[in-house]
Length: 249
Image (tube, rainbow, N blue to C red; front, side):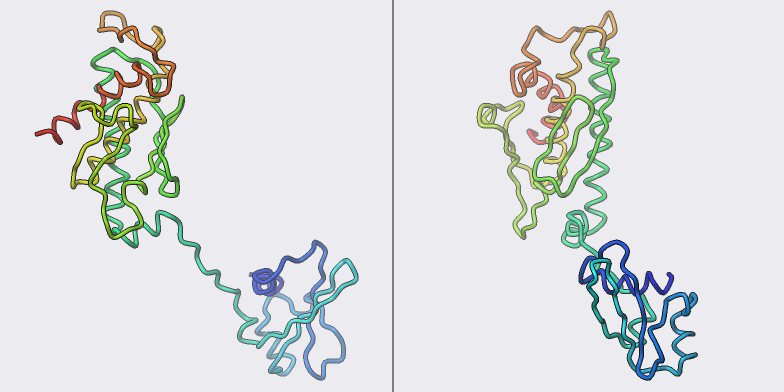
């Protein structure tokens, strides 16, 4: 980093500087303000060259005719400020559950969504697109749309010491055995339930006849336009079939 960048790393961590701010240096007994051009590319060498003063003043000459003076010890000024890393929601999940558990949850999202779509293609001759699959640990809810599905494992792996064993569903389907709520101590079953739910949302937006091969069973005449209508419920039940075999044993 250049001397200017090092100095700015310390100052801009505390305040924003207006564009066009000039930076000057000064130390005790110096004849005049020192331009950064005189420092060349190394503050430490310049500091030794001028007699190693114990304190360096950084003068900020701002375009609005305002100025500020910042005092620095040489050792602080020689190195850029180290930014404290901001922990993401995924970082926090790794800290709580471990990287292996977090990566496993993410792998299940990608692999299971691909597996379910493969079964759907085999069963109904679906030739439509595959969704872009995303994992978002910071989102509170998962969702499925026309081009993608986004899974939020954070709702299943909460920031709490008490794990969730009940997989919840919307009230109007909560009691159904095929697509309703269920209990499982395996959090990956909950992930699979969410994937099935959101993949059904994606597929309900691609039910046109041009998305299916001739000669395969056709989808029933249902309302595929309503978000959680009977068409979506049919697709969700299809995608839940494999999971239900496991959790209902």
